[in-house]
Image 1 (cartoon, helix red, strand yellow):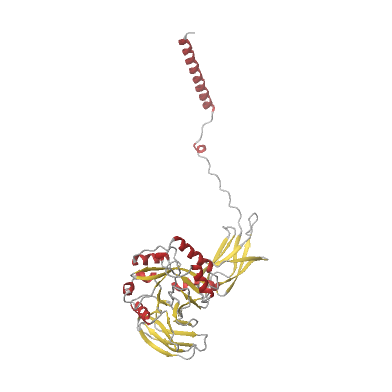
Image 2 (cartoon, rainbow, N blue to C red):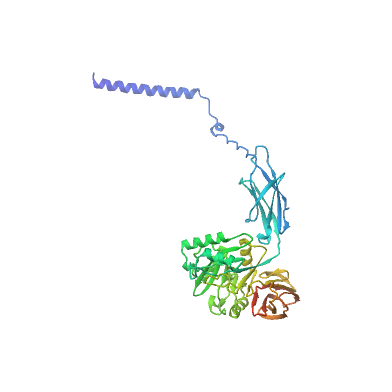
Length: 449
């Protein structure tokens, strides 16, 4: 067959097929109803109603209640039809410690020791094993302050001491019988593995209500040495001003270490506004360091005296100088809160308890509301019957305001003063008959007409 005839036949077949498809499509469109504008946009799908959920109601304590001591918590649980009930329930005051609540008849109940959290406003939080079933109410915690004894500056072999973190924390608790202990190796000597081990040792050594193991570091430069408590890292700036800013941003507690008489280290304790926010403590363990403490207060720093040992031997907490911390109970939250607010004193007596307040505020407080008078109170309680108080010196600013004669191991005293207008601070130095000395933190007061 002629090839040209075959080619033409193929062309006609293709044209016929295309024409049929075109006609079919046109006819189909002609018979279709017109499409309205509304039908072009699909209607939004209706959201399914949320599934029913259990609801919590705090029966006790009531919102904004003043709470103290052992707190009874009662929670009502409402479970609508179709909702899943929680099987576990926990309560906490702004965080740990958490306590498990047990179901008893119509209520979930449990007891929480409110002395293990800082005084002041807290959120009573109720959480369950269902993440969305929870509630909270505000309460006001108010518990009496107690005195806890600590060593907040020490070393092990991870810098220039001996043995290991686990040994230090164990000795501090079991042999030195401390309430609080911090290991503070030089951060310049640490590596990642040693830092991890130190953190784990502190975590394991903590015993809620019985012993607080703080994590710490010592920043060590020719400019001066500082301890840092509860640090999130062991890497900190080398420049002092940058360090101050980093400390404030990290919201940690810091302390000036072994300051001498205060004229050499830390730029002679020249006042720094950002530094005053960053550092809360200064070591005061002898007459020379007392000079540094008094110099710092004169220059405008708001600091509390610390009596930690800086030991490099296996005698953690056993060197006849301690820091006494005022807190309602033994928990990391409480101790860190007390240190951040300068509620501590330096003591050469292992168990002498000192409570002072000015216009009702404990040592370390900064009172900014103007007042015309100052009411100063103190209470000294030493359980050793053979310890005797020689004298108590009350200072207004850097001036000896009054000397109170001592008698026996215990003493209470109060007096009202009418200072000149302005800002003043009041602190005590307690001298014992055996030559031991105690230095308290000040209370800062604003005096108006």
